[in-house]
Image (cartoon, rainbow, N blue to C red; front, side, top):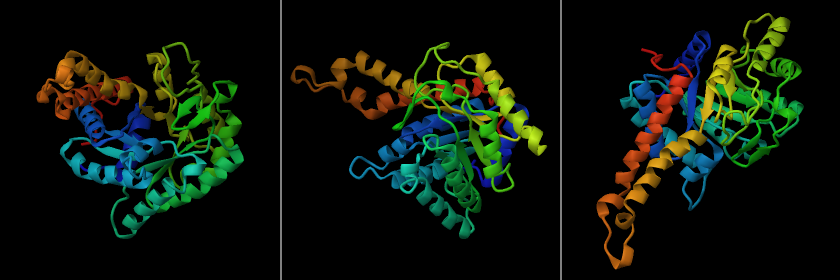
Length: 340
């Protein structure tokens, strides 16, 4: 199937919310990790979301120039071609973009999609993320309001992060403290500034103790039940039940019960990066250790081309990451839910 059209992406999100499941949103940094994600979704018979962070896009742009926009556009164009052979619908998304990178990342990408839509084509990406969590909520929502209008004009969904997620993600760092919990007042101010869909669809990355990075279960205090409070608080004022489509950030180390509670309360997208990075790299490390004297020209020997050929370890890396994506689909209840 091709990359999801705006209509298909909206249907994906609607189905997830109604069915109380979520799509894994897999960060990729290469054509190889892209294929791993696509393979994982196909094996799980799940539609899904593939996303590129600012750092990932810079890496994709090449170390010679490190251009985020060319890196993101190149991988997205590649994805539009290769995704056709996978029997699932895939949405392309850009991850965390703070204020100082908007002009060098999201705004140029929005313009690329606007030009495509004006020419009668679908947008290049299906959604973009504005991460204003380092700004005051007032400034965050003012910028979000303008970006939402631009996104809607290009048939793109906007993701907004209104309050901080702890830890570090591509240079955006927040302390792990009591500010990691979105309040009902924060949610009401968001609804007032951005509307509830009538001005353009958006996904809401609310904070309920989320932390980016690697943590064992129990080391991070998540309160996914808080999402229910936000839904009900806004519903009471605006009369729209379950008004928000939530995104779960910083999910590494979350328990099955925490994930289940988040799904019950409106989470439709859960980001996955740390775990898939490890799943990709672990088979490579295994290959290198097992073939030490083959991948290196030890003691002036010639080594073994068959084991230092990138394809030999690359296939194992793709398989490892694809299996982790499959597991994520099972955890988020998206397995077997692909659109026909």
